[in-house]
Length: 474
Image 1 (cartoon, rainbow, N blue to C red):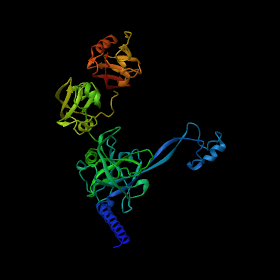
Image 2: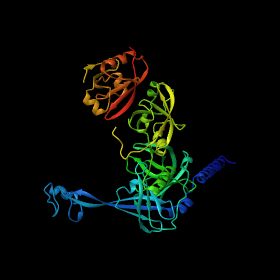
Image 3: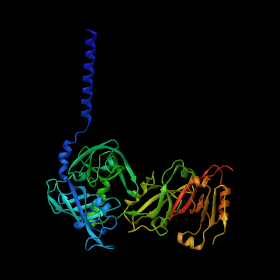
Image 4: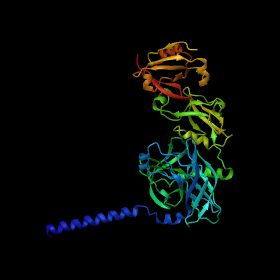
């Protein structure tokens, strides 16, 4: 065999190997065709409309049409108002929005996001067979962003629901929805993370995916490879406004619990403790004598709320609820929210370095959350790098505090600044000792050991916080 023949044979083998590898990879990738055929009939398009009032503008022409920008420059600010318009007047405009949803019962119950139908005067549901039906809003829960609709129909195709608690990171998932109004668009990806907590969404352990989700996908189903609904596509974190970002879905187990309550009573009941919590950082954990940062630190609590009535205190670190570990502060609202108002829970806390368990009767979430000032001269605890002054009676009454001193100046190079203490903060306690006056604060600080982290409770902008203060060596 010549050298050229051997070289040619090697190239042939290499090409054959590459094709075989590609074929093997193709066989390993999921095929969503059957899933889409089976599930698409149960996915719906939702369009809403509502009337809004807008102030009149000199650039709004006749027939509610905006005058082109070029004419704005031409007329400047001298364009006269059309007849019937003028300063201080307004006009009605129709706003429309699009979203997705899916059928959960043959008799016409449909699930979607609460924000899809928020404020809608009319809700239209378009089925897979092109029928358009007007829908009634059964109920919506803003805290979980779940809504239930009802259309008058029977024998509708429904989707099979899965168990979102069994979902694993790396698992393949697919979404069907109406991005930008394009019905039954299909995208796929994997589960990137589970139990994600997003800002202002403490009650939902979101499923994070890399599935391409766009405006209009909201409310649509997220499927596993068995064709079961495991989530409701709800949010996009993006800088571009499109799918180039992170996608988040509400776990179907959470959504169905809410949907069942909405269908039975039109509203959702959830447990409430009446506490303001914050995460336990590594520095705070050290200051509390904890080996690892875990739990939910009570920064403040409603004096009339269930937690206070049950014996919980500011400065307690909640470690578990009914035996379930609170590894992160974001987990506590979900654990308490699942408890029926009036139910008792055993809450284990760390207080003054000791664990203790308290029985607390959980209350019902209030309709609106409660919002939760004689000077003795200035003092300057040198070790802290702050100047403080006492609170007068007016300040104390306004802040609902019975002790504390206010920070009037912060050394930008001091340890207080490094801990995040700002001018205007009220130092309420340090190392679990109530701060009564500037002089007493100076005494407390002087007695604290050097090189250790101590917890400091602050009052700022109507809320309480804890920070860890590490004292420098003298």
